Length: 263
Length: 287
Image: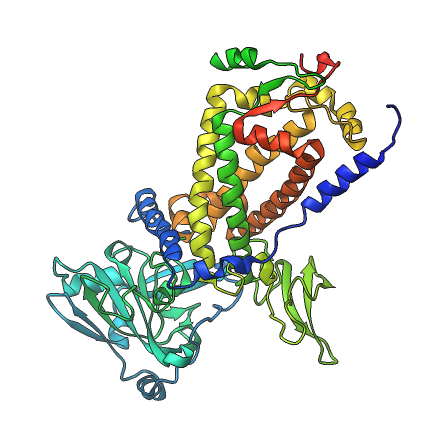
């Protein structure tokens, strides 16, 4: 055979090949296996503990998240989740510009503590320009100022059985039929004592705005945004996360997101 | 090597049929199928994750108050009140209702990047998308490491994947043969196959793995140089997406060629390793 000719048989072969590339559709075939109560989903989710262990192995406990230059702060911090809580206790504080706010630190500590905003502002502060990564996929660079959490935990003196820090918040998230649930989050002591983990009261050289978590939010720079609880009411040191919410360690974790959000 | 003996012992000539040769080693076959399954789930769960924020940017961050967006899939309302799905690429918008930006039944459309048939789960569920993605990502990476090490050690990489100088010289002829659907089945990869497989295995696979790792805020602390290599987390996310599109394109061509080259013989070889060559007179191709 010479020259360019496609006979009928060859044409059918090519046409058949083309048809075979039509992608499969109907991905709802898997939906039942992937519902929040399914065992298959639990098995798949077990890979997250492998990710957690491998990342903890690869990432030095004190390794810093990248920090950026002032010129890279190009926009306000993008708010997400609760942006204007309407819980009565929060509204009462907000009315007086958070003058009556006190952060309490309790649970498995030798010395329970409580701080006013002024007391926190007068403690040695850390300022860092970091990138906030939302689980949705976007990122935003902002300058954060606050008290290193390690300093506060030092003062409170952790009991040996303390393993996690739980942040209880003023904001509620609406879960439809099951009603409103208060936001909470938790981290292990590696992240709690990390030098960039701060209780932030300032953002981009201003007092922290309500949309961004006023009066106080936590920055956990090596994890995703949902870990960084806003509107912090009190901090509790605990040995286990099971007593809180559905026991998964946070508001979003109870809804199926992974507790370790370094990925 | 025993494989050579195997080939010798299995060389047969049945009537007009060609020789049967041992074409794919066990490592090739196992990694091939691990990738096939993993990539299927990675693609559909990846599109689910993309849908949580169906927009891509260049740089460290996402521009909300400035514009560094290069692609978005959004539902938008026009002046007359009609809602449509639009895909915007480099500032140019195209109406893509039914596929990108807005899809589903006309009386009850969903406003989402990729349509329900392209995501896992079919409904919007970012957390489950992430669970699926990170599970299969481990298998994908493990298969890549196994393949890379065994191919390097066995010589498969040098012998069968990397094009030789002679291969490159034969490129124009190979191109014209392919355009005429004159395919030679002598069991060895031609230069276009080598280039395609080398691009996928040695460029796109490492890129998609490394850009995936670059999106991890934890790994940014351990390996901050990744951000410099890829020009920021959002650029890495964009490259990850482009690699996905290239792999889908590769998949379509791959399946097309399998069917064109004889699907049963091709399937047998990637499952059992044994492949029947053309009954060819042209022995020079195998030499």
